[in-house]
Figure 1 (cartoon, rainbow, N blue to C red):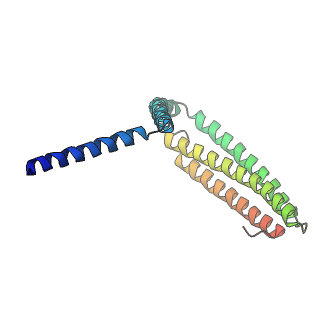
Figure 2 (cartoon, rainbow, N blue to C red):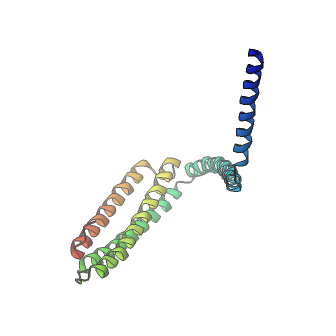
Figure 3 (cartoon, helix red, strand yellow):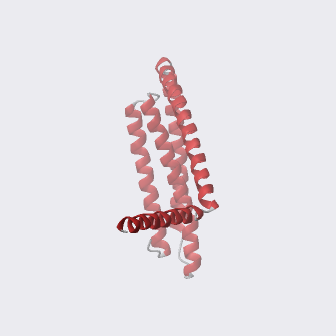
Length: 179
């Protein structure tokens, strides 16, 4: 009798587990499968990107060898850097003038919109300067420019970013916006 009770308990537990498992399997929805497919596509893209990166690293090694053979590349790069820095300098000067000449109109909504418009220009220029600096850092790592040239560019871009920060503070002060 005990053995019959144990057997029926085991059968009952097994049946409940089977029903529970079937219920859970039936609960998956198509969006889960779609999400799995999307993740698999992303993994494939990342693997392809990783393959491209190793190809780029090989090209970078070749570029290092070419740079060592051709010292005129540094001169060209340095001239391009100077031109870019001069362009950034001129654009910052324009934005500084704009920020200094901007005054509060008394209409908070209009002033805030003016702030957002000018702020977006300041942010865009800041991102450009960051990208420029990152590119020069890659060139320094690749040996295209010297570390000293990069340090000089880094100091100059820091100075330009400080000017952008000051222009933003001036804008906030003139428009009476506390951001």
